[in-house]
Image (cartoon, rainbow, N blue to C red; front, side):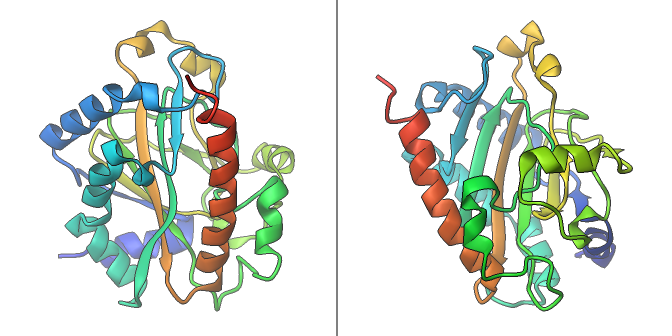
Length: 245
């Protein structure tokens, strides 16, 4: 039975945690799949053991994993309830990260891609938000988030967001392998620091995060995010995949 308090918590705080959505066997299988295909990923950080694949749902090795996440019963039930059964879909913003540090940010289009949100008010109460499902493939406490930050308009600029986070109350989440964090993409959050990702233990026991974003099909925000993200992925592929031997 779906717990409506989780949806209420997401509305209030910008996130909630669905516990033990994926069993240990599935987590182990997803970890092995990821580690067996590191050569297909890009390098976006200086650490030799750090990897990233944007739009992983597009690739043969990982499309099945994405389908398992997007079609998971608990995630589907949560989305159906949160969107009040309005038609919704995975908008194409998906990522696999391995030992990758992450500064303070929101998952809205930022920087040179912020212009795609020019005709949309992401904070309008009449616009259904996009929700990100983050699957953790190990225990950890790397995710920090500013509760309630999804409700206040924020800059679409990373430097400004970094300064904004320093003045806010921060919540550090404790996540277990197989848990899924459902997060409003407008929420201000960060992952591990560069220093944390320098731990040599991670070379043999990596931190792996898999995520994908959902939105209402009729939502102007979903449509703008999908379009802008398509352009962003083309540039990402060019910068991090096309030059691979």
